[in-house]
Length: 329
Image (cartoon, rainbow, N blue to C red):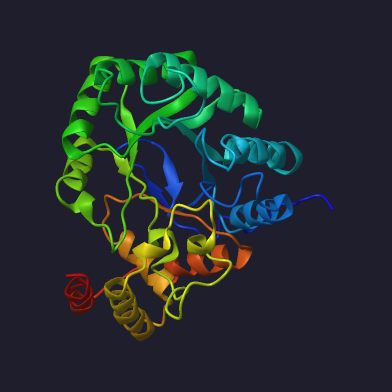
């Protein structure tokens, strides 16, 4: 049965301006880091993308190495895009990245111009696209001059293979330098993608201030700490969870007694707000206006539906924020 997008898909989603740019992103975006590779069920991937779009999620975030195996998330997304969403391309914001190991040898990793330009060409071919909306330097390279990496992003912009460029996993100082270099080229940094959640608050120590000063958007990944900020792990490690997968990034030893106590306390605060812990965690991420969108990762359609309901209650009282801070100390 062919897919027909819901006519009311833009009725309830919130769209936030990305920094000082003209681009708006949905308050919740869908990341394809996990659960969209060749090891996963393609029919489930298709169902998740359909439902996300029907709920107003227009931004789909990928990277060259997403899978597993690397490249397969882009290939699978390309198949779904071609068969189901081709007529909606101009309604979508599609992003990709390069910066982690993708192919063997000295040219398939880090931040050289050789790697970034070649990787994007491969990503475009896998997805069947002429351009991506956003292309990221996935991580800073300690051995490649940042001028070269930013020069590669500028080159990609001027080729028309990306409409915007961004950075991910850059420190506050590196971000300010990257923004300045791009400005010298006559370009700009649209967005930064950091790891940020209630269990990982490093961007509050300077990076958010830089993003605000520079007019750069922020789209945190792992707002649910790879599932730890849900009720999933309160009674142990489920067999279908990320921590139970041999190829996953969330290892069992990260789910300590101390973390479980925090999660339990946060879960009680969420209940007082008539939200699930996941919904409160997403709302908490979006409490700062410098944050453009929360980048979620899901394994089932139902998770997307539940996460989007976080937007029904985005307000926090001072008392609630203080209580959360006390729990997280």
